[in-house]
Image (cartoon, rainbow, N blue to C red; front, top):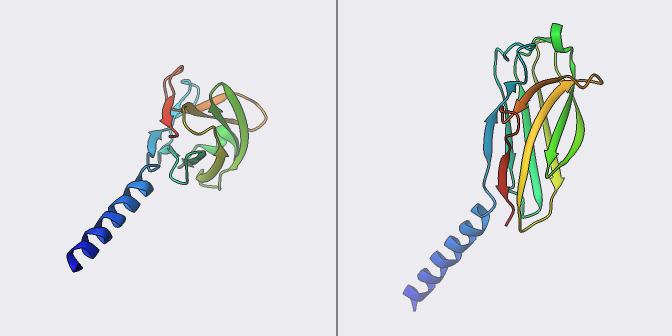
Length: 144
């Protein structure tokens, strides 16, 4: 009887961990200059695409490190692309050029979505950085 209880407990734990990890599909992508007009981010920058909170929740974290604010200023527009549609989010950099932004977006569950992020100067629309870097490329993420 005790053996059955232990086996049941182990199965419950394994199934619970499996359900939790079903959504843990984070993809980290470096920000890259969109054109040669903008310098590299000296401290780096990245975007994390994640759906760990459920089958219809897209979590996006954007991190910019040591951007040259003499070129970009301290206000950026973050453009999140999801399946052919863009949504704009504001981001403020500090005096050193660092900034972080976390976005949660509801998406249709049960399908694969195409995602990417573009950073522009606030109000100007000039593309500065992109993740993933290559124009025309995107992240594919399953929300199943």
